[in-house]
Image (cartoon, rainbow, N blue to C red; front, side, top):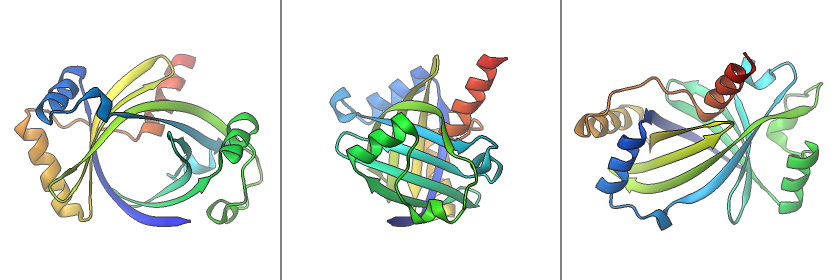
Length: 191
């Protein structure tokens, strides 16, 4: 199991802004990789109510279960464990999870349910002592674009991120995490 502190800054982009970044950083379509996130919660929204996110991320060569918990603004504690393809299939098809310490600590009384999935075409690159991500996400009946910057320091990361947006004349937009955008959109569809 891997545990780390994640410091991230994110901003939604228009398609045009996204394409400008792709051009500016000279990114080729072959540089993008596809990942699919499946998000889980209990029927009574245990993770949502505790401001946590729990997901299965399926990548080309591995599968990861991750629990994210907020520590402070822009800082998340992230616990991740790799799962086999067999375990991945059991999670997706039957919501059957392997024994995972960071999940067992909650003694959940109700089963976990998949609340939605989201496919992201992502490119990542080193940028000013951190990592810059450009994401094109597709979920439900919509899509969105975002830029994300991960840093090892909140103050430095915020400075770099805001300078990047300003240099490209991109307005700061309140940006929910992917799971929150997915849930919000699905709730909007339900009426």
